[in-house]
Length: 92
Image (cartoon, rainbow, N blue to C red):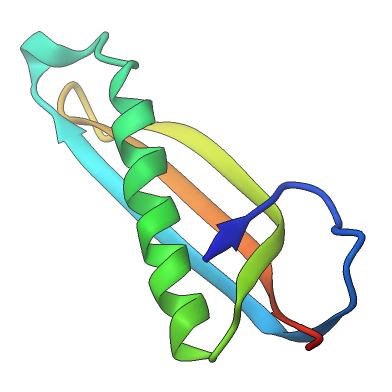
């Protein structure tokens, strides 16, 4: 399963769009753990790949990730990653 943020120069058919969300709650003593976004992006990439496979796709193009920090009162704080992309089937 390949994943790209750009278009590809290979014949393909668009199968559909998939999205996935990952999040983690930080305790008050972890409020500056922004490196955890890397872990969340990897988790989201895995979810996207699985959803593309369920659509019988060969890969994803136009993949984007949005990151957000959400405060819910004094604590906790949530780190959220939303990813989405276009599932494609390569022409044989």
